[in-house]
Length: 133
Image (cartoon, rainbow, N blue to C red):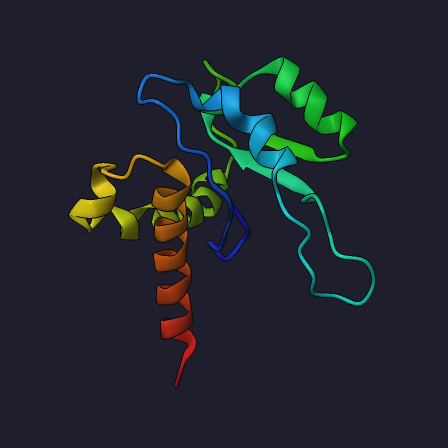
């Protein structure tokens, strides 16, 4: 899952349990839809990409730089980037709501896009519900 700074999911890819996350990094970045907001054309890519040591890959870093995205990813075997854990907490909190439901903890649907859509709609619904007075 890739999300914005507030935890709203932008793109989700469901893979097998034994697939490394680093293999899906570029597919997630390339799959971000246009996001409108400020005046002008909609944004198609983030300024920076935050990732933990599981996303440590020099070829991915090079590809992100080619796309003019700053990779903020800790290196394996070195101390963590200071303050990265607090920023990554947003992503980890985005993962938690779907795991509270049995239907989402184990994928029962044959079509993965239905599973992903239900999980993302649940996350967005809970976010909108919190912002209401």
